[in-house]
Amino acid sequence: MARPVVKKKYTLGERIYLLEILKGMALTWKHFVFNVKASFRPGPHTVPTCWQYPEDRTREISPVYRGLHMLCLDEKGREKCIACGTCAKTCPAHCITVKKGKRKEGEEDKYAGKMYCASFDIDLLHCIFCGLCQEACPKEAIVLGREFELAQYTREECHLDKQKLLANYRKAKEEGKLRPPRKAVPVVPAPPKPEVKGASSKATEVKKGQVEVKKATKKAKNAEKAKSGD
Amino acid sequence: MEGWVIAIIKVVFIWVWVLLIATVMTWVERRGAAMMQDRLGPNRAGPFGLFQPLADGIKLFTKEEVLPKKAHKVLWNLGPLLFALPAFSAYAVVPFGDKIILGGKEIILQVSDVNIGFLYVLAIGSLAVYGIVLGGWGSNNKFSILGGLRSTAQLISYEVPLGLALLAVVFVYGSFSLRDIALAQQGTFLGFLPNWGVFKQPLGFILYMVAIYAEANRVPFDLPEAESEIVAGYHTEYGSMELGLYLFGEYVNLVTLSTLVVVLYFGAWHIPYIDISKFLGPVSWGIVSFLILYLKVAFFLWLFVWVRWTIPRFRYDQVMGLGWKALIPLALFNLFITALFIQLSA
Image 1 (cartoon, rainbow over the protein chains, first blue to last red):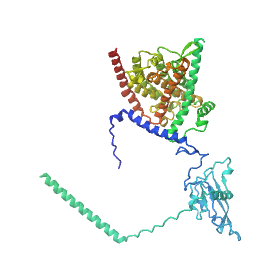
Image 2: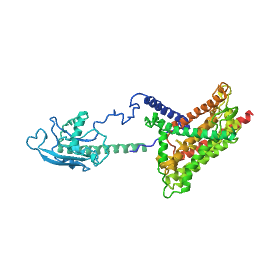
Image 3: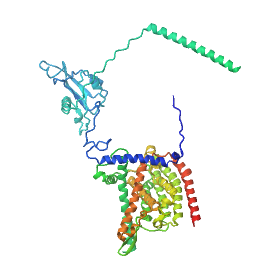
Image 4: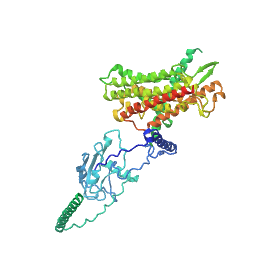
């Protein structure tokens, strides 16, 4: 329901307007003084809402931020990717291409699964950083990290191959910027379903009851009317 | 020195000085705005970003001049000139200090003390609207035309209360010369108040302040260039130094109007209760009076910035309503009261 418009009645002081302007100016003056004082503080991050970006990189990046991609290794240092190609299929921008390779004997310490990706290419110029590849990956192999400075001078530099993706992982691990492992989603037990037959019969009973009540109220009203008419 | 040499020196001096204030004002405006909005503002070019106006100027000068295909060439080029030139020439009769004695010669710190200085300022001030309208019309752009038309209506309706408020000042001081008015504001009035125009004309002062905000196209009356409604109004199509002339002219206008406020209502170079000119030599008094005047002007310039980031823009019918229904009757009332007082006290 739309809320009715209540027109406020202004007092004389408000209608003259000058006093209200002075109040507003007092507010802006407060902000001005606070920020001028703040801007003379030492250090790069002075005014609370402003980060002087290239010099001051202290601003926190949200844990759910989606930045540069990386291919993860497991605890034993093996590649997690099994080259299932789900990421490539999910990608709405069609920027991922994966080529399969079969694991040979003696390579168990290198690849986690029976299959591995022989090549893994991402075209960053097409990527929209939606993170669907990460959502789709069954092994949590491809992950979007927190690196956000992606500008390059050539098109070739915007093309990520497998080596670069692995290097991104190692760099993030060194800098401690790895995303914390996903929290397990708590499983809520489904509520027991009520019996179908009993439920339907109850509903009809309630309806009947309501109708009876309505009739009763009507009768009562009519009686009142008749009385008042007399 | 001959008279005309002194005159030329004064012209050049005040030209450079006003240009300098206008340049610094662009910086003050941007940093002040930033500080009021919890930002930092331009702080990269030079210490505290003080060279920012210089960088802006270089940018505007080196930019390509784009003429729209269907623009009227003559009017297009005339617009910025007609806007900026009156802004500068209005300063010819506005005093910028008391007087200075150099080499035994008394020099008035004012380009020319015309006895109709008042009318000159009003007339030249109204000329600026031609720059806006012609620029808007010559651009052949609907937003520009709308901006130009708005400014015409607005300036015409606010010129009336402005003129009436000033007329009351003329009643009080009995002179059209700005220097005479400034000199008359020395000493005290009623025994304890400084003899300033603002105490003799409180209502006139408020009316004048409101009217100059409309006259200078500043928020809350910046309808000719209302960014959120008509892009940039009359200078939508302009770029390069033609746009620069419009922006510069606006700031020069601010300086002129603020100086007028100080000269008419805030005692020009006088300080309340103390007559400093007695303690200082003729040369140093000239310099000090100049500094006092511009200290006061600086406050009113800052007020323009301060108000701009406090109040939202008026709706168009509200602007017209305020002008015709509130300011003009009040100005007439003020005039009537002033005349009555003068008649009774004479």
